[in-house]
Length: 185
Image (cartoon, rainbow, N blue to C red):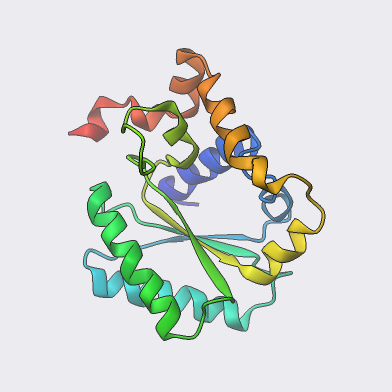
């Protein structure tokens, strides 16, 4: 496992699963059905090709082998605005390739912030990751998981309250990449 994959694995296990931000992520992670794919792209066209390749791989691979993919982008789209621009192109790619309703994309970024929030608001921590990430989710798997989970509409509020309750020390431990001065340069 590369150092990039290791950092993302720690984030997934300590933040996403550890804080129960996504109640659906624990089982496929424990069963090693989450694919970590580190992008080598440095331009949009190459990243779109990598994203397409990942969805084609998911098309050919049953969910019992690969449930979902985290496409990790360590060398590109560090600027959050550029990242959100790319997400629009990625959604268009999903539509053009006929994957709407088959896959959905979730987004994570070290500088993530929700519309209507200030970048420093704690609630943005729910989507802050060590690197830009595009999470490819199988719609059928999500629909199946939702059958066994009550209160799905409460998840965003519960997550916001969870991260807002973290102490400064907990934030530094869970999100060290947000405090690492070397990475900010």
